[in-house]
Length: 268
Image 1: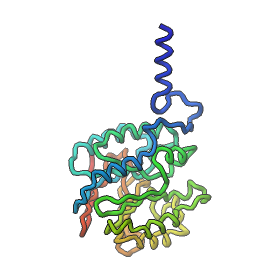
Image 2: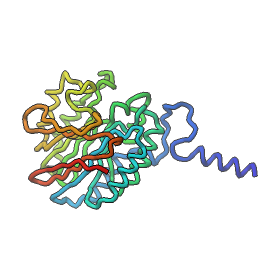
Image 3: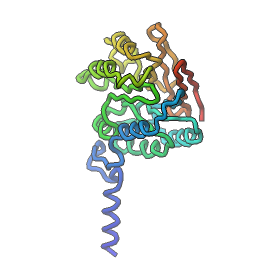
Image 4: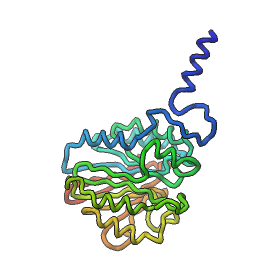
């Protein structure tokens, strides 16, 4: 009997996001919680049929709202017209591993792939290390059905300005990388928008000018404010759309074609 109990305890200790941690900001992760963005981007590459219309959901700020995030996943799975989902950051509230794991366990039930940008809360404690292990680089991009999607870290305040945020070298490389001319338009994701205290507003105009160098920049999307937003910050026809927090039970649904795009706020 003791042997059975001991074996059961070992299995529990080795499973998933370790139930007993040496420290609340422990960064050890089971394999299922690693390189999520890269894995899901590969799934998108495989399923890409180069259709004329792309439809994706942008949501954000799950933080402590686990029940609402579960309800979101159920609502998203009730649709059959979604290509992928983007989590706009603040996956966690305190940058703790358990929070990241709990949210991924919920989001992993989506019927479509999802990617996530880093939020300012996600960098608290050892959250930055956890995000990198779970999701990958703070800045990333992928091409799907002729559209280049670029995810950027814009949480300068939480990096104490010791790390380049925004990372203009990354942005320059992405602008220069035409990926064999296999995309004709660009959409940019971020957590904190220009003008917010978290953003490095010394360079907000420069940041926007860089983004405009992307091929046919259509629009930018952010989270962070816990409310739906629609702003033409720079008065040049490039709109920034803000997603609500999960606590308010809604998300943004974007439909992008070769000629135009539309979006709507969907409540669940």
